[in-house]
Image (cartoon, rainbow, N blue to C red):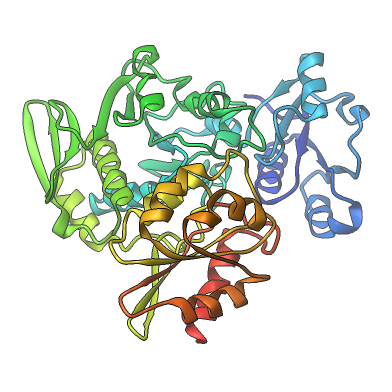
Length: 446
């Protein structure tokens, strides 16, 4: 892609947008930065754009179609929805729209493992990177976690391991991971998509540019994901709980890989990650590693060392016989369901935040079976209480501090206190990480 001298509109000036602007300006593009937020909120972004090799023009506040005049291409940040009026207008004018990961793919020579799905993306991405590093490869892990993909284009890497969200995949065309994983699909982001199928289809674009020599890793236990198998150009490899002649499956004590007429076992006793969902994540990582050609000894070494990620079933402390876990990254019903299923002990569950659409009925059986007390907070508290409050002892509180104090009062020795919100954090916190850190600080202060 030739960008020198081209006028390119970068829409949305948070971390990803600014990274794209820097990349484009370094290659001679005439960048135009735009953000719907007011200019007095964007001083840091404005100052950074002013320091580019060719200082960028800037637009702030209510969006205007005139911003597209003379523009050769538009790079929207992931937070800008596909139905944004400026993007709709750009498409109508025939102006190319491409996501940051698509822009990176057009310049990068590094082969990539890309990972999407509703849940488990971050853990699987970090684990695959750890496995490849254990094999002595030069690897980066980025994309939807850590640094944007565009910042790795100029590095000297053997492989890139990239977490990609549905938002990032909406505008891809040439983004071609040599190994692409689709972990699972459950209701999430239905405040942005009009249903599960459109959300799932956005994620399925991870396979759009793959070729017959590439590998597509699918969860054969997820009906929606598994239904994609017949429409893919890449070689399909699968993982799941049921035994398979090819791919990965789990027994009571091991993950088994079968491929090329051989079988390898990876004992679960060697896996530090806890929870049933993490068995699935490890199976997916084994499939990815084998697609890259990593030997089993390196996979075993990495899974022995890999501690998991912050804010996903992260053990915080034990107090008066009760164990406290931070699962702030559990921002949808599917994630919380997996987390609740990971404990045999009675649970005091702290949940709530900003509703993402789709309802909470999917939690009902596990709430009834495993949750001793349900503590709700945030914008969705009353909605969650209406859906789940009749299933167990339920309390609505005003903030996270009160929730932690009430959880301590309710917890018995042997119980689990679990922050797993099933919601986004934006009513009270900047993001799930800030929410998780606040929870850990409150628990440590008890």
